[in-house]
Amino acid sequence: MSSVDPTPTMPPPPTREHCYRHPDVETGVHCTRCGRPICPECMIPAPVGHQCPQCVADARREFREGPGRRAAAVKVKGLSVTALLLVAIGIGYLWELVVAGGPGNLFEGPSAIDLIKAGALVPVTLDGSGGLVGGEWWRLITAMFLHAGLIHLALNSYVLWIFGNLMEGEVGRLPVLGVFFATGIFAGATSYAFAPGFIIAVGASGAIFGLVGAFIAYNYRRRHLMLAQARLRAAGSMLLLNLIIGFTIPAIDWRAHLGGVVAGVAAGLAVDPGRSPRARRLVSIVGLLLIVAAAVVLVIVRTNQIKANPSILSG
Image (cartoon, rainbow, N blue to C red; front, top):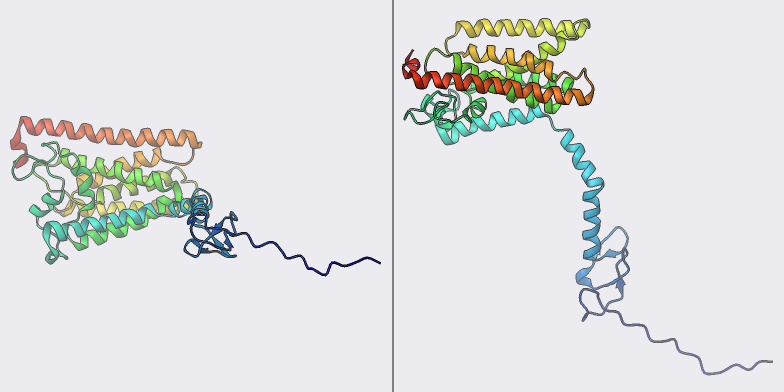
C-alpha cells in the first residue's frame, strides 16, 4: 500500500500582467491578434475578442495596400469620363451665375462682360491688356466650360452625353478625355484665327463636334460592318444639320464647329484601338499633341496679325 500526503498542494498565484501600452494598469485580457495584454482603454472590439490599437492600425494598412487598393482601383476604373466632363460643365455654369453674373441670370446666362470676366475666349479684354493677344492662353480651355444660357448648356450636355459615352465604350476613357481637350483647344484656336473681328466665344460645342468627328472616323474605318454604316448615316445627318444651322444663325460659331470636326477626324484616327497597345499609345499621344501644336500655330499667327494691325478686330 502507498501512503497519501494529507496536505494538499496549492497552485501558484496567478501572474499579474500589465497593459503593454499602460504599464501601470493590471489586466487579464489579451489582444487576439498579437497576444499582448491590453487594458479596457486599449480594447477594440474584433470579430473574435478584442484587438489592440497597433494591430488594428496594421490591419487597416494591410487592407489599404492589398484588397482596399484593388477595390479603389476598380471604383476609379468605373468612373465615366463623360459624366465627369458633364459635371465640370455644370460647375462652370454655376461659376458664371454665382461669381460672374449672379443667380438672376439662370436662364439667359451672364452678360458678355461677365462671360469675359469668367474666362470666355476673346482676342483682347475690355481694357486691352488681356485675352489671347495678352497671353491669356488658358481661355482656350476655360471657354469650353462656360455657356451662354441654359438652353446652350442643355443642348451641348445632351450631345456630349450621347457621343461621349459612345466613344468611351469604343476607345476608352483616357482617349476620350484627350480627344475632348485637344479638339476643343483646336476649335477655339480656329474660332480665334478666322473670326472676321472681335469675338466672345464660350461653350463645349467645339470639343463635342470633335467627338463627333472622332466617332465618324472610328466608324468609317469599320464601314464594312452594318452597325458602323448605320452610325455613319446617323452621325453624318446630325453633323450636316448642325453645320447648316451654324451657317445660318449668326450667334453660332460655325468656325469652332468646323474646326472641331476636322480635328476630331484626325483625333479619331489617332486613338483608334485597331493597333497593338504600344503602337496605339504612341500614335494617340503624338496625334493629339500635333493637334494641340497646330492650335498653337493658329493662335500665334493670328496674334501677330492683330498686333500688326489692331483694326482687324473691328472688321
